[in-house]
Length: 464
Image (cartoon, rainbow, N blue to C red; front, side, top):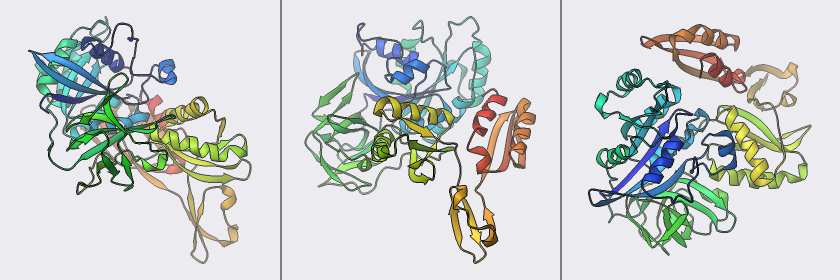
C-alpha cells in the first residue's frame, strides 16, 4: 500500500489541467506515441469540440523513482463550475490534489471553491504554476496569491508548462514524496466507495470504486450497501487507458467492477460495496447531495417516446449523477420530466448528450419553480403550473420558495452585483469584507427569479 498514490487535479476552467494530465501520462509511459492525442482523457465528442472537461476520468500510471516502483492513480476533474459535483466525487477517492493555477491569469473563482472542497477532505495540496512558457506569465505575483490562499512556503510551489513539458518530472516526484499513501486495513471486511459509473450496452453497468478496507477478488459475491442487492463480481480490474482485468484489487487501489447489473436504479454513486458473507458495519460517508440551481422541463417531441426518454435519462444519470428529474405533465406538450441542473451550461450539455448518445429529440421549456397556494380552508396545494392554481376566491395566500444567497466577489463588483440582486426582488441582509478586496454579500431572494439566467448574469457582471 505504501507504493500507491491517489491524486486528482483541480483548477479553474482553461488553466490547462487536461494538457498537463497528457504530459503525466506521456512521461510515465502509460500511453505509446501512437495512442497519444491532445486532451487524451476527454474522450467525449462534446468535450473535444468545446475544449472543456465534462466527466472526471480515472487512469492508472506506473512510475519508477530511485529503483522503487509506484502506482499513481490520477483522476482528472472538470474546471467549469457547472460540473463541480464531479469534482467532489473525485476528491472523495483521493489523498492528494494538484492545484493548478495559470501563471498568466492568477487565482480565479473555481480554483478557490474546489480548493475548499479538497481542504475539507484533508487532502495534501501540491500547488503548481502552469503555462510558464507564456510571454504574459507573472510568476511572482501569482506565487504571492497562492501563498496567501493556502499558506504554503514559496519554494513548495512548482513551476510547469503542460505544452512544453517543463517541470513534469518534478511534479511526479512531488506526488510520490508529498502525497500520503492510502490508509486502510487489508484484513478488515471489504469496504469500497463507488465514485462513478458508466453504462456499457454489452456488459451492463460498470462501477468505478476505490477500496478503502479489505480486498475484492474476481468471482466474489458482493452486495451494495444502500440498495442491499447482491451480485457476482464477474470481472474486476484497474483503469489503464482501456480496462485491464485483474484477479484481485487490494486496499487503497482504484478499479472497476462488472457484475451484469442492468437496472440504472441499482447503482448509486457514493454507495459502498461489501462482501455478502463478511459485510462491513457501516457505509462510507463520501460527498454531499447535489443541489440543482436551474430547473427546466424536458419533453419528447413525439409523446410516444416518453418511456424511451425515461430510460435514456436513467442511463445518463449513471454517468452524471448531478442530473435530477421527476415526471410532470403539461397541457400543451403531454408527458415529460421536470429536471434540475447545476447551471445553464449543464442543461445545454445534457440536452446535447440526449440527442447524440440516445437519439432523443427533445423540447426544453423555460425553467420554473413550485409554489404552494393555501386555500381559505387552510389546505396547501402544490402549484407547478399556472393552470394548477385554484379559483382566486378560494385562495387565502400563496408562498414562494426563497433562498439565502451568499455571494463572494471582488470589491470593485459590489455595485453591479447589488443592483442585479435588487432587480431580482432581493433584500440585502449583510455585507462584510473578508480581505481588503474580497466582499461577502448575503441576500434573501425568491427562487423564481434565480432559476433562469441569474447565474449567467452574475458571472457576466463580475468577469466570472
